[in-house]
Amino acid sequence: AETKLFGFFHFKPVNQTSFMKTQQDLNTLYFEVEKVKSSDLFKGHTFVSGIDHTIYAPQSKKILNVCSDKYELVSNHSLFNPIYTLLCDRFGKDMIEVKVQNIEDRKFYVDLIVNNKPFNVQKGDIVCPTVHLHNSYDGTLKFGMAVGFHRLVCTNGMMAFQEEAARNLKHRSGVVNFKELFVLLDNVDSQLERFRKLTDRRLTPKEMEQITELIKEKTDFPKQLIKEVPEVIAREQIQLNTDLTGWLAYHGFNNRLNHADIKMHPEFKEKIDRQVLNVIEIFN
Image (cartoon, rainbow, N blue to C red; front, side, top):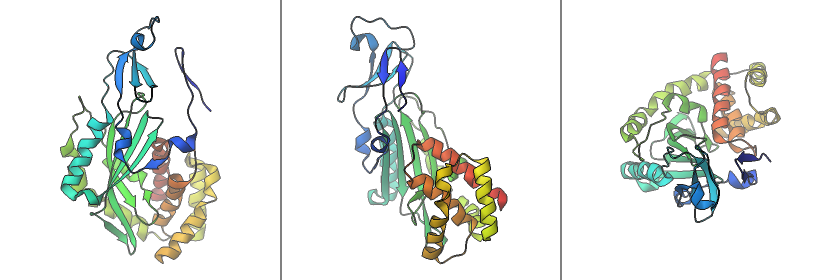
C-alpha cells in the first residue's frame, strides 16, 4: 500500500474495502475534529511554517492533516447538515435517501437522492435527481456540490451528468449558497432531452464493438472491467425489453465503475465516466 510522509508523521492507508464502504447515516461524518497547534500535540518538537498546525480527531486520536495557521477548518456538520435539512423540509424526510462514503475519516462523499422527483427516461427506466456533496479534512478535496442523477434500475450514480450542473460553491465559515442549489434542482429536467438522444440512438453489434475499442483507446476506463460490460448490457436489455442503445451502452460501463471492486476514489471514477459518455455521444 502507498505510504505518505508528512515530516516525521507516517500515515499508512487502511484496507481499501473497509474505507470505501457505503453507509446510509450522515451522523457517521459528524465526529469531532479540531485544528490545534502541532507543538501542543507533540511536546518538545519545533514545527516550520506550513505544518505548524494539525487537523486532529480527538475521539479516535487520528491525525488527519498538517497545515498552516491560515488553513480554515470547516466541519462536515456545518456543510452537509444544513443542505440535508433544507431538502427534507422541501421534499419530506422520507423522500431523501442518503448514501455516504467515508475514506479514513479524511475524505467524504454524500449523495442525497430526491426520490419524489422521478423522471421516466423510457418505460421502466427511472432516474431521480441527486445532490452530490464532497469535502475533506486532509486538504486534498475542496468542498463541492453538484446536482446529478441516480438511476433506479441498477442503483447507478450517473456521475458524468454532474458535469453541467456542477458547482464548487465557495464557503466561508460553513455558509453555503443554497439558492444556487434549488435553481439547479428546479431545472434538472432540462437534462431529459440529452438522455432521450441516447435512448433514441439504436446501436448495431458492430457499432458497439467500435465504441468499446474507442473507450479502450481514448479513456482511462479500467481494461480488466471492459469484458464485463456486455453481460450488464444484455441483462438490462432483457429487463427493460428494449433494443441496444447509446443509453444502455453508457450504463453498461457506468455500472462497472459504480459496482466493481476497484481501488479508485469517486472523483477519478467521475472523470472516467465523463470520458466514456463523451465517446458515446460523439459516436452518436
